[in-house]
Amino acid sequence: MKLIIGQGSCGNAAGANKVYEAAKQYIKQNSLDIDLTSTGCIGMCYLEPIVETVADNGEKHTYVKVTEALIADIINSLIRNTVLEHISMSQEDKLILSKQTRIVLRNCGNINPEDIEQYIAKGGYKAIEKCLRQMTPKQVIDEVKTSNLRGRGGAGFPTWFKWDAARRSQSESKYMVCNADEGDPGAFMDRSVLEGDPHSIIEGMMIGAYAIGASEGVIYVRAEYPLAIARLKIAIEQAVQRGFLGRNILGTSFSFDMRIKVGAGAFVCGEETALIASMEGERGMPRLKPPFPAQKGYWQQPTNINNVETFANIPWIINNGGSEYAQIGTDKSKGTKVFALTGKIKKGGLVEVPMGISLRDIIFDIGDGIVKDKQFKAVQMGGPSGGCIPVELLNTIVDYESINKTGAIMGSGGMVVMDETTCMVEMARYFLDFTQKESCGKCIHCRLGTKRMLEILERICGGEGKEGDIELLEELANKIKESSLCGLGMTAPNPVLSTLRYFRKEYEQHIYDKKCTAKQCKSLLAYTISKDSCTGCTLCSRKCPTGAISAERKAVHSIDKEKCIKCGKCFEACNFNAVLV
Image (cartoon, rainbow, N blue to C red; front, top):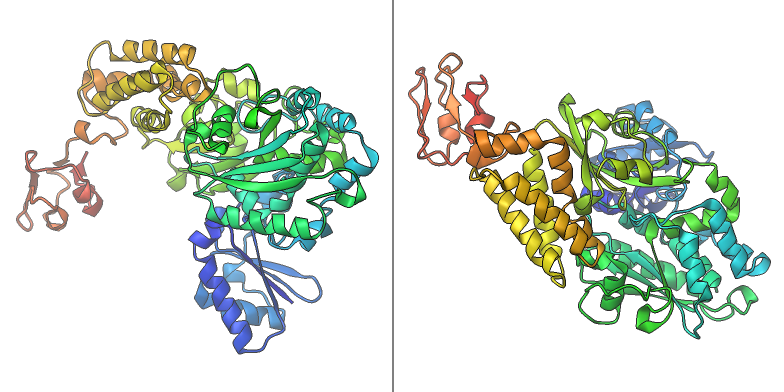
C-alpha cells in the first residue's frame, strides 16, 4: 500500500507539508505497513493539497483539498479498500488531464522527484544512452531538427540551429546552460518542472552537451525557487552516484559535469547575454550581439542556452523520434506548450496542450471559465513583455505566428486571465512598473523612456490624464522598441500598445470623462448611497474606518466625500446593494 502526497510549491503553500507530517505520524503511531512518499505538482493547483492512495492490487484513488484532519480517514479507507467520495477528485477534474498532451509534464505528479530509480523506471536516461551508443552528435541535432522544436523561452528560435552553431564553433571548452530564471509575474512552468521532474532537465542537457561537444553544464535558477534548487541538488548527486554524470559516462568517451548557479532574481537575466554576465559574477546586463553565445558566451567560450521546458522535451524526442514530435501542432509550431493559467480563472494551474489549440478551449474548456461566471475581458500572454488579447480574438490558435499577430507574444507560457472588473489601463501600468524597475539601465531609451511612460500612466490612473497623453505613449513606446539593446526594452511597451489597440476607449474615459468603468482606479471613483435601497441598518457606518458615513438607524445614510478614502469597506459590508460606486 502506498500514500502519495503532492508536495510542489503550490501543494506546500496549501498545507501539503502539514498533511505529510500528519500522515507520517499516524503511520508510525499505528505501526502501519504503508509506503509514504511525495511527488511534484500534477498541474491542478486549485485542488491542492492532493493525496493519492495505491492499494496492493494497484487500485488508485485521488483525494483533493486534503487537510490534516482528513488524513486518518484516508489511511483507514486505504486499509479497508473503501472510497471517501466527498473528497474524491471529480470526473470533471479527471477529464482536464485527458484533454491535455503531456510531454514536458509527463512525469510531474507521477514520480518522486527525489528518487532517481522512479525516473529510470519511467524510461529515464534511455535517451542519453541511445545517443551515446547509437548516434553521432550530428545525428542528434538532425533528430531535433526533424522535430522542429522551437525554444520555449519566448522567442521561439529553432533549437537545432542554436545547437548546430555551437557544435561548429571550435574550442576546447564549451558550455551547456539551462535558463531557469523564470521571472514573469504569474508564471511557474519551469519551477514546477524542476520541482517535479528534475532528471528530465539533466538528461536533456546531457543530450545537448553531447551534440555540441560541451563538457560542463550550468543550471541558472533564481534564488526564489528554494524547493526547485533543493531537488536539483539531490538529482545531480544521484545522477553522479549512478554514473550518469562525471567521467566516461556509460563506459563511453563522453564526460559531463553539472552545477547550479543561483541567481539574484533580476528579470533582465532572462536575456541570455545578461544571464552570462551574471554567471561570470558581473552585474546582469546584456551585451551587444554578434558575437552570439554560440561563438563567444560563458567565459568567451562557445555556449548554448535553452530554457527548462525546451530541455524537458529533448529526451522524449530522442526516445520517440523527431518525426513523431512533428506530428503534433501546426505547420510552423510543433509539439506542445505548457501554460500557467492564473488570474480570474476557475481552475488555475499548469496545462500542457498541443500547439494549434484555441485560447477559448484552454480558458473555457480546460480552465472552466471565469470565476463567479463573470464576463471574460482579456488574457495577458507573454508576461510583462507580452500583450493583451481581447474577447473578440478568443478563437486565436496557440502558435507563435498567430499569437504575435494579436500584438502579444507566446513568451515562456504565462497566461493571466482577466474579467470585466479588470482595468486595462491599470493593468498596463502594473506591468510597465515591473519592467521599468527591472530595466538594467544600460539603454537610455529603456531606462528613461519606460520611466516617462510609467509617469503618464500613473497620471491617467490618478485622474490627471490630459489630451495628448495617448499619442505621447505611442510615440515613446515605438521609440523604446526600436532603440533598446535587448528583449526587455524591445518588448516592455507591449502591454501598453496592445491595450491601446484593443481598449483605447478605456484610456479615453480615464482622460476625458475621468471615469474607470472597471471601478478599480480609486482616484476616479465616487461612493454614494442610494436613497431607494438604504434600509438604515448602519452596518456600512460601523465598517467605515474614517467615520465618513453619517448613519442613524432606520434613516437613509450619506457619505462625506471629504472624509471618504475610497477603501470600499462600505460597499463590501452592504447587504442591500445600497452603496453605489
